[in-house]
Image 1 (cartoon, rainbow, N blue to C red):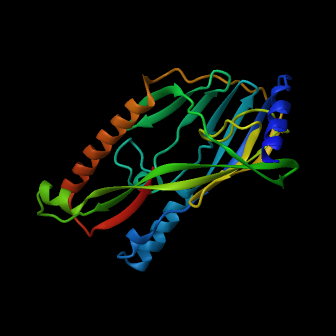
Image 2 (image 1 turned 135 degrees about the vertical axis):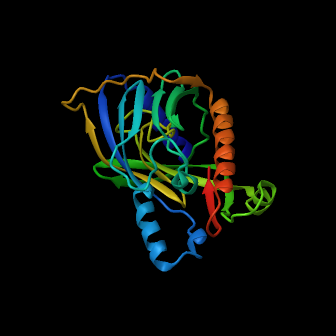
Length: 281
């Protein structure tokens, strides 16, 4: 039955050739482990959680047509982020910014515009196929009939302990501030609608016979709050072209080197109590 549903959806999707434009609005909510705050005074904990709220709740816009899509965050004033491209402790807790993502749906490639310590990178690579599993479940999201699909992926968690004790040398700091890699399996759940026949969705998600309206796991969910088809405002889907071009693996290496450099610099700065944070990649 599930295979029959999948076949019908794909045949309907492939048979749709009409050109169209659309704009989808998403809201995301994330949760993080707060154990690293437990040694802070209650007043400081409260202030820290308020600062983190804006980093954990974000809004995005996805422009799309039948061949490509462009995903970006709605820019707002955010007191929880640091400026100037320096050390951003918030990103160690909530994860790095996703940047702008242009996807060429037909050619199965993407360009991800990311900024790292004041330098702009264009990550160009192929879109890895996702092994979606159709469940046969359906529900209404707004006015659209949505179908459920899932896949399981392995993610890495890093348990980072920031010690800021003066008088310790770098070797002692490295021992007292380990980065412990851990992996776990996470099931992603998506709800998509073939009534909007474009094989894309928020962030890097896609590969289903219809627009993804909702996707998430235990720690984060992204929900479409509004879709506008063929809007009066003209949409221009243009691939980013300004920045240093790198592959995804090259960018990961650069990111890791910079994180290590900034962590060592932070440790040498000293002062204060230690804290721990769990970050999922």
